[in-house]
Image (cartoon, rainbow, N blue to C red; front, side, top):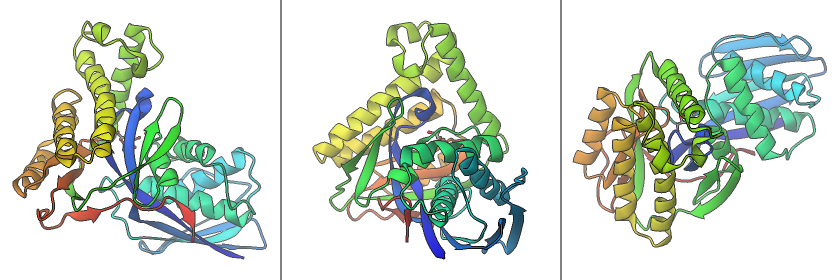
Amino acid sequence: MTVRAFGPGRVNLVGEHTDYNGGLCLPFAIEQGVTVEGRRRADDTVLADALDLGERDEFTLGDVTPAAGWRAFVRGTVAELQRAGHGLTGCRLAISADLPRGAGLSSSAALETALALALLALAGEPDPDRRVLAGICSRVENDWVGAQTGLLDQMAALFGAAGHAIALDMRTLAADPVGLALGGWHLAVQDSGVAHAHAESGYNERRRECREACRLLGVASLRDADPGRVASLPEPLRRRARHVLDENQRVRDTLAALDRRDLPAVGRLLDACHVSLRDLFEVSVPEVEHTRDSMKAAGAAGARIMGGGFGGAVLGLFAPGAVPPPGALAVAPADGARLL
Ligand code: GLA
């Protein structure tokens, strides 16, 4: 038995650093991603080939030990699916990708979701519960890869739909497709070229600050924070919480602007998001500012740092006729993770 599964990368239109704060995000899945071809084996061995790296991994279903790099994703997905009660079969997996790694398009979630769908299909479960699967993939990332990320990337990869952004409410895990009719406008991302050494520690520090703000405010998540009381928090916690509250509102405002086909307003919201991530949440770096400046100079109606920050990608929105800078990748909403 052979299966092929695809997991897409994602772009987040707006709603940054809100996912682990029970907030709102508006991502979409993109065409580029990771494909996993799986063949069942008669024994309980898992053989995995990362085709573009020319590397291989091998382990047995009954003895999954930690590993580093791409192997952590394979082993983590196998282990977490088994832990969740799925009876997996031995298999041979071939992994290939047309998504740049480490460029802020969440190649991680693309890989996790493609692996999970392939492994489950081989085990006779072609249509798993996608909310549950998002949680499993997130545990792979947190506990096996060691990145304390939220659920945004996995939800975007699993709930993506062609032509649609996905309105995510991270408190309820509601995922509602929203038509992304750009009417000739287009979106592009450009890698800043830096993945800062402190990306992970910086991200984790922001998460700690948000938790500390919640503790001082006596709320379970910043979604429930009262704006008046946020103003009385000590710095930098006030700035961090302010960003999260404003960012949730920017997601609502973007949904309203898309509804009335007001793309210039969407551009202004992207710019406002960037300013907030730079000045209040403080996750920008000079290379990202430089990349954003070149997008604005090329005529972007709005441009912003995207993802966790401290490097990574910049997203730009361009009016018809405007040309993104050389090297930018055009992105459009595509279907989510699926069996091919
Ligand atoms: C990274 C994480 C996501 C999310 C964003 C910031 O991409 O993987 O969970 O927290 O940063 O919005």
